[in-house]
Image 1 (spheres, one colour):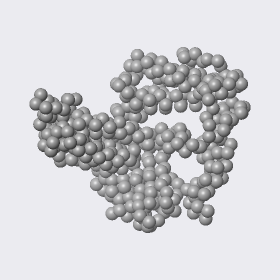
Image 2 (cartoon, rainbow, N blue to C red):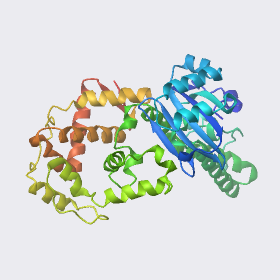
Image 3 (spheres, rainbow, N blue to C red):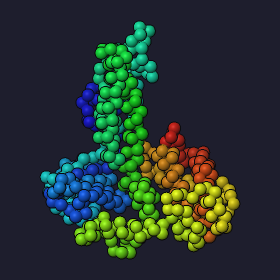
Image 4 (cartoon, rainbow, N blue to C red):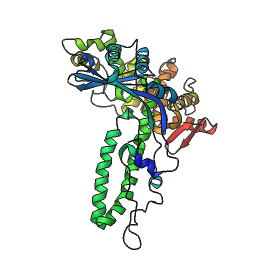
Length: 414
């Protein structure tokens, strides 16, 4: 795992643990909780996050995480009573059943740990001297001899638990290693096949897992920041419904975590509201919320083509082509980028992820402005290429004054 003895004995240069600034606490409570019966729930407040699910048919497992200095994390996780007091303090005002769930979990049923990962490992560091040609036949027609030691799973690419990918990646590693061994032995025989297989396996494994390590670190930052409270989170977009509209309807109907005890079942209660709100949700309804007018809506299962979107914009009187140097009613591009990157920490954000976050905030900003600025939203939505060009222009400007720096696909604070 992350504390692999084998990895330590390899003595790779610069190999050290990276503390991600969080504590994770795991707990198991004997007894069923209505809200976790055959379902998972997650609650966030922009700093602390709780995730709960059934553990067995008669017990509930929960995971709670929050930011903490490394020294305080080490101290807290050694004292179960102090750790539990910290959790109860943080979640005292949270919705049911969270306060009772934490309070009822016995001290011997919970444990905590500081969250670490490691920097992405390069194949040449794991196997010194093994370039892109390692494992390929040499002058003698056989692969060069290799050390018969490799790493797999968390020993090779430890990551935070917030994308739930650690075990998945380890299983993928096992399949990949088996495939590389079969290929090597088939092509070079039993002994030379190992020399061919290990470098090949390591290059493929580390290439595939690198993005997951980085993505898991980004997810850890997101879930414990104000980004977790944004309505455009992927977990909400992927539902296929207008989630903010559904949430408003649930609140108006007094439907919440307490509805888990409703005789009809929480799923049925929520599904009824979703069906009712989804019946009127469409692209035209979104424009209606912004402009106070409703063009004809396309079928629910068909997104309007770009030409139709342009026609809708024309009907609404949207500008023909907002200039790329438009400031969007004084939208603070550089400050927004910097704030998002500071939240992400040293790891930074992938350029695509930063672009999505900034442009989402930009369009939301326009929609809150006077009519002239709000009308630009329709044009921008119908011209995504131009919208992305606008982001690139401001990213170059922020880079030019040293506010941000780019390295490959990553963007970090300058």
